[in-house]
Length: 224
Ligand SMILES: Cc1ncc(COP(=O)(O)OP(=O)(O)O)c(N)n1
Ligand SMILES: Cc1nc(C(=O)O)sc1CCOP(=O)(O)O
Ligand SMILES: [Mg+2]
Image (cartoon, rainbow, N blue to C red; front, side):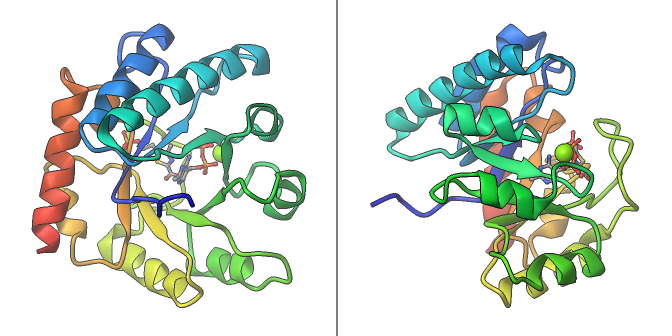
């Protein structure tokens, strides 16, 4: 039996922030030791073959670190359906990527499929069926961020809370993404979000393990 997913701290990788693509597996390893429960490999620039090699190295790092701390750490691929299928990894798609229904139909049933949700209307569409609901939604963006500038308008904690509550009514977990740091993560503790998703707060930290420990403890403490 697989263990339930720990959505509390979800790391999305970046090929530059930590010093280059070769540094990413080490950062992921450290971050999982620090408490990251889910990883997504995001790399917009390389071709699919290079991406697949990088994603496989990240998945191996997450598996090794997860084994050290006694947890299964799911690894998602950002955008690239064919690579997710090839490597047997989970997939996250956005509103302007391969359509959710097409991705769900092409992805083996045991693999999770996440979807970005930027508004109440998008969530209504995603949950209307007739196909399956997403396995998780990324509520995006909570705040604006320099890491990704082509986002929808910031939802803020109240908007993120509203969308997370609506997702929960259909049993779908929700993580917030965009501009989340150690300084503001506590502001989301009163929302219905199941967790927070970060890029720069961990990928750009001098000590990614310590950054993960800090984020998770602030989130857990603020939740009470
Ligand atoms: C968990 C999570 N939520 C949202 C996003 C953003 O996805 P998308 O809108 O497709 O943008 P890109 O990340 O592909 O630039 C995400 N990646 N992960
Ligand atoms: C990958 C991504 N997606 C977003 C969205 O709003 O859809 S914001 C984002 C980047 C988040 O980076 P940081 O944690 O450094 O702010
Ligand atoms: Mg995308």
